[in-house]
Image 1 (cartoon, rainbow, N blue to C red):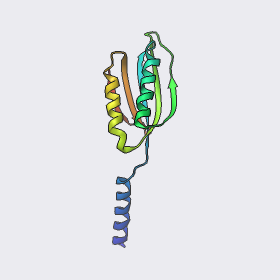
Image 2: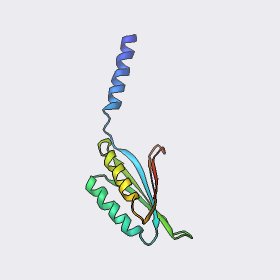
Image 3: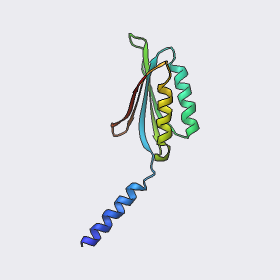
Image 4: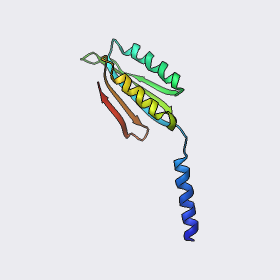
Length: 115
């Protein structure tokens, strides 16, 4: 009986390690409202080049400080996660972006980068 349980545990453990299903992430960019469309176009082109599909897009209006945000829900396979991180870091270096926030569907923050 113990051997069967051990084999079941090993099977589940190896299945979890070999899981290649995409994870849903939310990438939020806060920037000056005047630059948001330009930044959003750049983001779409880079995600398309990575072959990361976008499932939803949310755009907020400018607030009193003239900041606006866009949130993109995307499905990222595990092997592309380092490239998604590199994209977020690269965008975070732009002087037009105030903040980038990346979180998984489980709502655990993966990265929050103040610009």
